Amino acid sequence: MPKQRLKNLSTLNVSDLWILFFHSISYGGYSNRNQRLGKLIMREHDFVVFVKYQGRNFVLFVEVKSTNDRATIKHGIEMVADSKTIKNHKRTAQHQLRDHLEILKTDLDYEVKDEIQCYIMWPFLGENTTDPKQQIVKRWTEDDNLHVFENTIASQEAFNSWFLRIVVSQKSCSDQIFAHLISRYIVLSCGIFMDEIDKDLLALLTQEQVKVLTSPICQKGGALVVHGIAGTGKTLLILKKLQLLHQNGQLNEKKRALYVCYWPGIRCEVKHKLKIMGLEDYVDTTRFYITSTYFMKNNRNKYKHIFMDETEAIIISFGPEIVQNTFYKIYQAYHDGNCFRENCSLSGLEAFQQHPISALIKLHIEAKISWGELWFMVDTNQAFISLPKNSPEILKSPHIILNKLIRSTSQICSFFSIVTQQPVPLNMLNFPKSQEEPPIFWVPRKQNVSQSVCEVIVDLCAAKGIKPSDICVIPFLQNEMLSIEAINLQICQKFVEKAFRPECISDVEDFLTDRKPYEFLLAWALRVKGLEFKVVVMVIDEDQFDYDDVDDRKRVYVICSRSTCMLIVISDDQNRREIGLSEISEEYCFNIKFGCNRLDRARKQAYTNRIIEDNKENDELEYVTPKTK
Image (cartoon, rainbow, N blue to C red; front, side, top):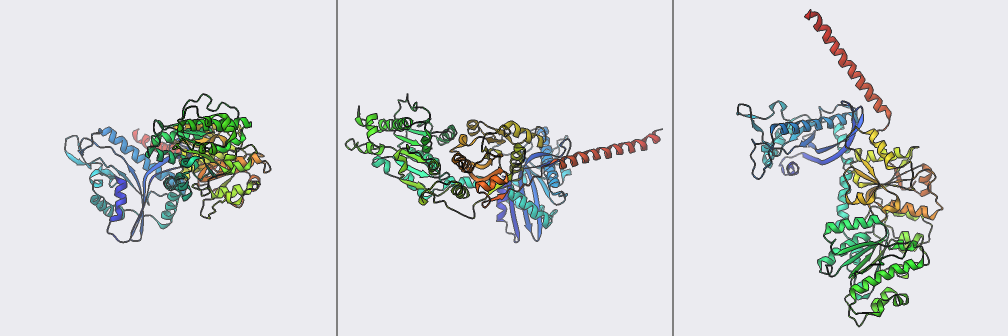
């Protein structure tokens, strides 16, 4: 309700009024209060409101508490709370506001409480209560204008009146602090902006993607082969097509679909999305193998539609018989789900060895079959790096090429074109280049690489507003110095004990299915292939990258292309130059200051304060004792 009231202030018929507010902003900072000793603590604002009116600036910190009590009767609300609960909520809100001001003071090295207005809003708590004598009295009159009660928030007219009567007549903020604070909270909104980017990307489809969704190739008899670099939305298109098939009655209990991929992470992600879409009962998922011929060996299911994702991974199979068996099993399951002729000669291995899949499908002319969808999605960049002679011919002739990115990876793609030396047709590498794309950020690697990672994660969460669950750290190579234990220990040492703080985990499947808001992922490159994360931190330790090694260049591409909004590379300067990042990267700007000096100052200040308090007590004793005698 307060959010709507703040939005509706735009309807005020008042000239020279400008309002900007931020909602649910998370941040971190240093606290010197009590036993915190200058360590980090994470906090969240309910609302931060910036107002300009008649040449004056106003900044509001607002905390919202939803408690009501028996003295406030509101239709449709059954929840009641006793006075103890209300007082506890009041105390919590006051502590939150105090923490906001204290952390801001530490960050600015300047006292700001005289320039910022603080309010606690109670949407379901009335301003009147009863005293022990059962008389109706105003609640918390000693707190002056700190509280905004239900009778003010209930109507927009009352809220507008309160705003003009109280807010714009109270203490104002200097131009310098106002500008600094508004910049601070815009930066802290990075995480929210990334959420909006993701929503827009999922809502909009390019013309190329619409072409894939509406392609009649499978209905005419044949397989649809789609080429696309990372970030062109290949997996998204499969999910969208499944949704459309279900809506059109082509996907149900009798007309089932199969999703095939290689890496377990992307299979887990697809299963999760299918469940959200309500399609898990009609779509099976499985993985293909590169080391054995056991793929779908015991399968007895028949599928109307089959979608093979990450098809390029089949090119690293250990033998041509594995490749042949994989595609045959896919064709067989697809054939049996569409062709109802008993003992059809075109479903056997002999026929498969003699004819391509599309040709086999077209040979069913007399059967008059309404064929389902058979898709093969190929990441062309990864395939081009090491495309072997034995790769299936069907993958080399795409019907549609996706080259418009839906991720912010234009820089990554131009970066890939630098590091790969393989001759590739220009029309296959039609990378869109835009100067408006966010840059790649570079962080100099420290001797203790886990410390470098820790500082980046803490700064992202505490100073940029990035949620830990949106971050994935991907080491270039597995490194015992870069473990979840080492990173969590570094983070733990920087935060107040038992406080909310980012926590590193390494189980990809658990992270995808049950990610907690404070968890971020650490996983090696191939474990997250096919997945995407808003923020990717690539870590290259000393002597790990060899420019002349094709596998190293491939691994760099796999890591970088997981990013949708921000890519951060931690390496030494030599790696930065070798990889080709010098021209397309910027040095990462830390807003949180790390180091022992701040902690030492905090301890010294706490010690000084303790001495002052002790001296005060001694002075009082010296004054009282003679008088007592």
